[in-house]
Length: 274
Image 1 (tube, rainbow, N blue to C red):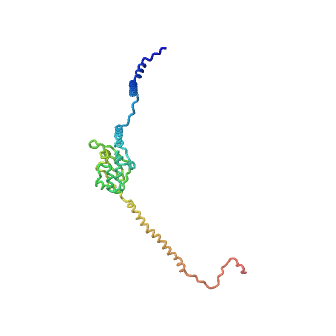
Image 2 (image 1 turned 120 degrees about the horizontal axis):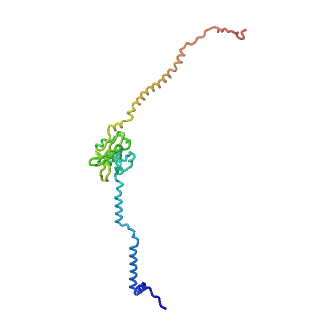
Image 3 (image 1 turned 180 degrees about the vertical axis):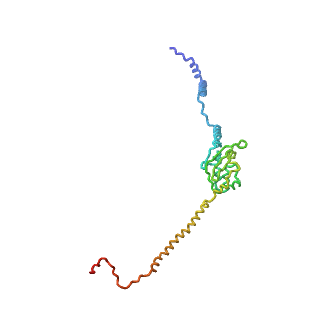
């Protein structure tokens, strides 16, 4: 019986592979090489690894974007004194009305010494306040009575600045603030000469309320003698109360007349007289 003829393509390859071990090794290496090339061409790209360079680039991008939150604003959002309470100097310096209100709040504060007052006020000014502004410091409490009123104006050299008005009991405090560079970055700062309140108006607030009410004690003093007099009058009247018995003792005593008692004339007879 005749044997079937082998595959004309695979039969020579099979004979070549099985001819020696060297041919078998070369064949296996060739197959692996073909599979590797196929995987490289048609396979998925490897996932990107986070190298130190990539990490540094990401961190620098984050750091660059962070100062955007600390940028100043030219929007004039009016504020009240309570709106800036508890805020840091850096947070207040982003806005012109907030900077002016913080300056006014520190300016009318009389609870600190002059050195502490100058240091606190200097957080919002271009220069440290000197003796001139210390001499104009209010010595009596001055209340801030309303929110700020602001407007942007163009200064010399095209620099924009804001004129802010803060109403107080002693009149309006007008503050000029401008964007300036500082060691901590760009921020709004109060310009020199620093604004102050009219000392005469502040002095009027120092008038003691007791001076206005002085006539009241005078009236009470005037009333006191009348009260004493009225209290004395009952004493005088009580002393004169025994007077009526004295006048009754001085009246003449009646003397009895001797003789029979006269019998009055009656229209009807006395019973038992018949």
